[in-house]
Length: 168
Image (cartoon, rainbow, N blue to C red):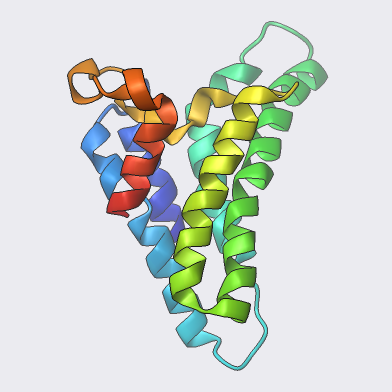
């Protein structure tokens, strides 16, 4: 399920698939994988993180592969392509890990709110720090369809991210 989520994001993303309506269901397999994992491992402490990282890495690697396509020695290609893919995958997992922590302490309803707010905070941070990487901001999935997002004038791209999460 988690890999399917990554594949759906790849198919939805401009430049790799462009079937942007898939963005509205792309998180569903990841959420389903989490629920299935919890049901299968109830009572045992097993991490969902490897499954989460798989889906996020598929999305990152498939949409940002071009970073490593420089005409340089292999070590440079590995650093310029691999580090952003792995680093962004790990950063994208932080809102999900926070969600898992909240599930155990406050319940699933609070964890849903936490995931959305933490994801939006993560994206905002990604726009404003020294290692900016707004390429995979969820709201960018509509980049080739401005008629759908005229309201970005007021909300910015994070409004699109919230829209996607509201439908997840």
